[in-house]
Image (tube, rainbow, N blue to C red; front, side, top):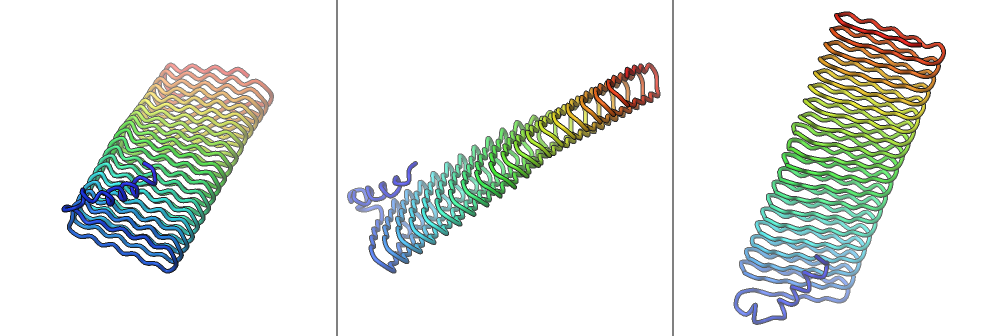
Length: 460
């Protein structure tokens, strides 16, 4: 819905006198000049409409409509230091449109206890601030567009169905706060372009809630929180340096989180807790980035992809039938995978120089696959349970592999090709099989098996 819709509709309603002859109040205020002030108050009416247009300096406008249905309020300001405040309380199908162009504009709107409310705010200038609140309604819509410097937008939608919030900011030091509580098919999108942007998004309770945040600049911060939903999705894209993305999903099923970061020294943390069949994807391209995924539940999946140097990835999963995949391309990477539960699987792939991979699995039917190609790689693997399988392949120089398994039916295979590689394998249980193959110079392999039916083969 466009920015000109509400004011045009209000003017059309005001100009049709037959429609308002006996059922509603109407107010029109037009001011051109300096130090203008407009105040419109309408109480206990049906189909009230107010349109205020101000052009000049130091303009101030306040519109209050209480206790009616189909209320329309539109404020249009152009100048310096304009302030617009519109509040609609009690009713259905309320509409608010505020357009400001100038310096140090301030817009605050409140709609309470209605259905089909819509708030549309467009600000163009410096030091703009927007506060939007919609409470107890269905199909609420909030759109805030800011273009300038030091803009800030805060929106709250409470207790509604099909709520939607869209915030577009272009400039420096922008902030956007979005909160949606208790609804179905709520959607929040924040698009920021500039430097030092901050976004907070909270969605509590609902079905198919979606959060999409796009940031382009430096020193951006994103935090998204979703609770007790079904098929919730969070998509965060950041481009620049020193960015942080934190996303939490608590409870629910079939929830998805995807974080993409391009730059250096970025950090991404993903938490999914108390749900089933959730997925977390972290994509990072740059240098010295950090990605962490924490999942607790059933049949969850985690994937961390890093391209660059000096990146670090960490995955922790607690539950049954969870899978974790870490792919790193570059040099001097660190990967850590922790899994506690049954039928868990971990896959770590590193390509580069000086990579470090460490995995821990406690449970049944766990599988660990680590593939490192480069120089100075180190891999440590610990499994405790039944039918665990560990496959480690390192190619390069100075590689080290340590594998320790406790349980029944464990299988460990370590292949190192290079110089100064070291492999140590300890298996305690029954029917364990260990195979170590090292090619190169000054390799060292130590295998200790304690149990029944163990088979060990070492080729150096």
